[in-house]
Length: 110
Image: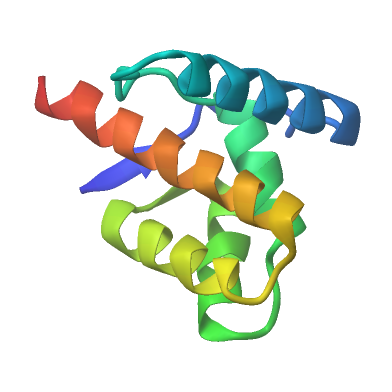
């Protein structure tokens, strides 16, 4: 399924960090957090931009960063692969990107 972010400017670094912390805190405080509890489109795009690179997975993230559109399965797989190469903060950011993708798929399936 193709997921699309509402294009606008990607979020700035401070907004990305604050929103990731807020979403993780909210998800952690709930026993069963809803799929819809995810970062905003601008933050999702910005996260992809932070981790774009020349590897195939990085190219998927880069394409999403440039266009705001990607195949949901490819984007999740790319983010999961990149999680293996980053520290805890990067892992958390990519986790939030994966959550954003799942929220988009859930919204389209509902």
